[in-house]
Image 1: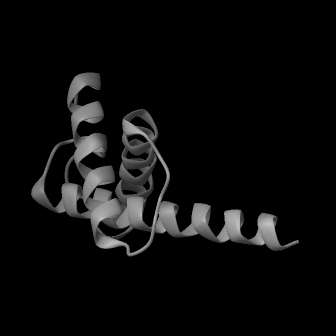
Image 2 (image 1 turned 135 degrees about the vertical axis):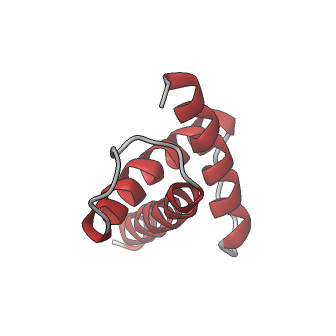
Length: 88
């Protein structure tokens, strides 16, 4: 997958993850794209544990779904770290 496709998939995955999770996430477009890109890496690594077919960075519909799931996991972790820091 090219870098441009990786950025676009990251943006889409980040937007979907932010739309799925309730609450206020104060991030701009760049942070949302980075969230989706990190989520894509996390989701790709999780997906590679279940499937050994094909290359890791190929674009598949299941990879996009795993990118969204990975972005949700990253968003939950960032939110939990932010709440812990403010209350401590």
